[in-house]
Image (cartoon, rainbow, N blue to C red; front, side, top):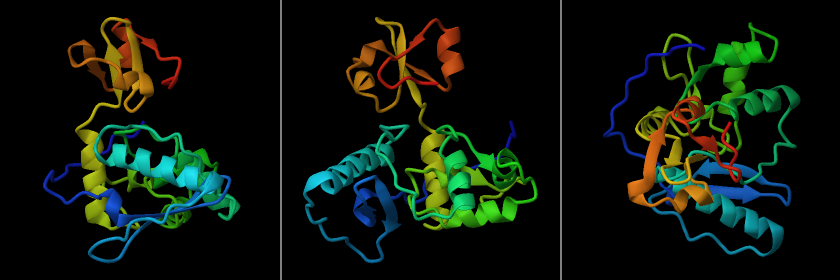
Length: 215
């Protein structure tokens, strides 16, 4: 695993849900975009499957931006994304919370180590930022690279994840969850223990939650 030296300014302005726009198909979320303007209008309520997906996404995005969620369960629809870009985004989707990988690392996972620039283009064109965490993809030399929401926002997201542990264990049950799991929400404050990785939790004698199934 590449060790990338990144340092962040905790004072950088963070994203808020009010600045984000969403679109969905019946299959999943198709777009997450940054609204241009001082204040976004209240989203129009949509009925049916699309409305439920949008509500699901808004809830999970709000929790993520508040540091209360380390993973997403809302489905995405990448059917309109070209095959290479889709494959690159699927690899990026598996980068763990709080960690970073390089464009070259993704290119290597796709079997084409020379395709780092093409991977960068795929990340820049990611239609569902945050849900697919292209902000966790950086340059091999430790530079941030690019980001469709701007480098200030990329830095603030990485800093948010750097300051939060993605796994929470329960002292009484000896089980650990991903942050944001329903079971994790029920753990009382005095029974909570934080872990940076599943290996840390297992070495401490904790087993994985059957609901969120932390890897």
